[in-house]
Image (tube, rainbow, N blue to C red; front, side):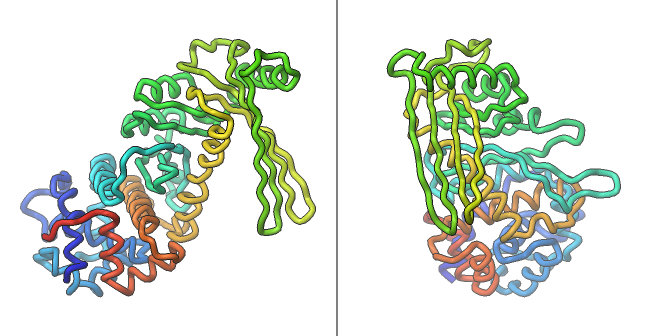
Length: 380
């Protein structure tokens, strides 16, 4: 009983969530539906029918802290409610609770990247594409925004930044986010940026390449160029990355249009797998005056959003196999997955995410531990 009372923290964050249903015509409490859905997704449920089955199976356990005036809702009730919920309002409640549970103080680095929900396409609409923010050190989702069907990530990223507390954060984005307006928004919010630079910014790329060439030829002022190399081996591969970090941006055209720009650079990587070697050169720019070692770390940590978030959503939560097509319903279920993933990563048990999900499905005390996270939660 003591473990299950920890769910009280979850309930308090959703009590003020606007109910989209018609007042007086509902049989189930909104907070009950949300709590059961969150618990279900943690407990290895991948669609609304799974959640309804899980809730019926665990009904006695849920009745310890939920009212359930008319029992457990049917799966189509879960589907209708989450399709009607405002994704931004639901996200605000979810992430406020997640930050509290994770005892999160400061976010460090925020990686931003997009992912398409392949199974969400319908006969009328293409698949839903979501842009997410990921706290690379805390392993937590900080927000998500759906890309409008007539738009792209360039317009979605500023909307996502508006949802985030950027003060003191280092925001890393792939080349699609290498836009002056996005850089200005990050700096205006009190953060710094590291942006990948590719051919979509042709003149900028040319200028950075020329600056790197000058640095390698020893033509730039002393003390403005740093080099740093890392080597990794394991699982039949060898990889070496060589960074050139340049704190001299006089050769960048329109440099004043990039707010607080202090640094440009290059990463050359050489990867050998089973005797086959591939090479890659990447360029970047940044506003924070920091050492080459720190730029190397930021660039490497950016890919945690792929490995620790997107990969896990596909492998451990089977996100690409989901056939939820209603737009707000799909976005809200995607947020449930990310919320569950963040909580599962906080639990210290040395198991895979998939195995933790199975453990939560079988053991309600373990599920309650995951919900409690790192906080001291009041009793109901």
